[in-house]
Structures are given as structure tokens and as C-alpha cells.
Image (cartoon, rainbow, N blue to C red):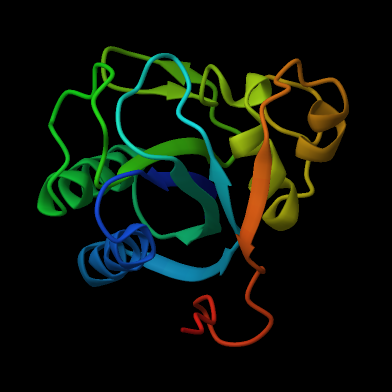
Length: 173
């Protein structure tokens, strides 16, 4: 039962809705087992990405299939929700990045694991630390340890708490 962690973000449209629909898409299409969701955090776009501020979260869980299939399902969820097939600085209705897959350390033309910049980004490390307390493959530290030395000084604001019960965030109007 391989465990994985997936970072999600969006800065177009109804950001909460887009993330929920992305999760629903994965649940309907993939071999997902049990999973946990982090809280949702709001951050400013980095690296000259256009659009509004991002909502970011991490989904960690068990997957009953090959890493390539999970990666493909993530790409299809992004396209289904209106994101461009090639990101290249574009605003995103949904962005799903596979951060970790068990102990896998790999690099090919489609996928690098662990994600090559996860240790440099607070918007990844803060939610990842909520749902993953193990040492990260290839990095030798836990997300919390990496957060202590992360060079990213950007502002990150919690929007929704980590779900205490059920599987989705409680959204109040």
C-alpha cells in the first residue's frame, strides 16, 4: 500500500470549489485508499505566475496503483477543471503536484520525485507537515524540520483548518 502526498493549489475561479472538485475527480478515477487533507492556506503567487492569490493544501494517503497512473490522474484533473496542459507561469484553476510516492526517488521527462522544490516552499511545507511526519525520501528530514530551515519568507495565511472529522473542510458562509 504505497503512501503518497499531493500538493494542490489554485488561483482562478472559486478556489475552494476547484480543489474539492479535483479531489472528487481523483476519487472517482483512481485507486485511492484512505487519505488525509491538510488545512487550506492562502499565499501570493511566486515566480511571476499570473492571477490572484493561491489557495494551497496537501492531500496524503494510500494509493493502490503505479505512480505513473496517479500522476496521469492528476494531470487529467487539472485539465478537466480548466488548467492549461502546460503551466509556464499561467494562472491555474487547479494545480496538482505529486510531492512524494512512498520511498521513490526518480527523475524522468514527466515526473521528478520527491518534488524538486518542495523543500524551498512554505506553501508546500506548512500543509505537508500537517499530514506527513515521516522523513522525506532523498531529503533526509521531515517536513517540519525542513520548514525550520526553509529560505521562503513569503506570507502564508490559514483559510480553513485541517478537517477534524469527515474528509473535507467545513466551509461557512
